[in-house]
Length: 80
Image 1 (cartoon, rainbow, N blue to C red):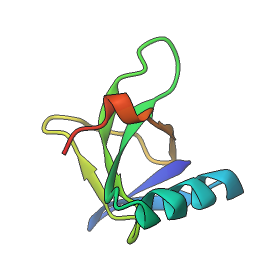
Image 2: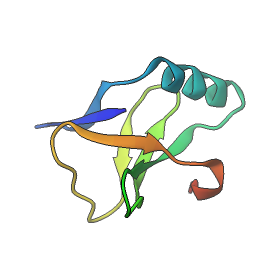
Image 3: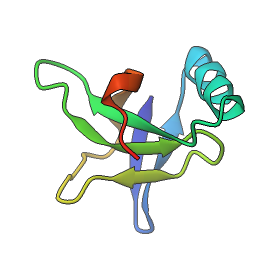
Image 4: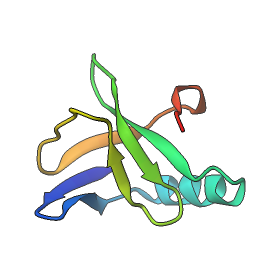
C-alpha cells in the first residue's frame, strides 16, 4: 500500500488487490481499524487504516514521506 501526503492530511494512493480483499474481510469481521507499519528493518507501527473508509490515522509525532510504502500489520500489533 502506498500513502500520499495532501494538504488535508494523508490518504491511500494505491493498494494491491490482496490488500483490498483483506481489508474487506476484516470489515466483515468487525475490525474497523487496522495497523499500518513501515517496511524494512524498523518495521514500526505508523498508524491505522479504517477497513471500510480507508481513512488514515497516524500515531502522534509520526511523519511520513509522500508516496510512502506501508504494510498492513499482523493482528497482534493492532491497537484500538
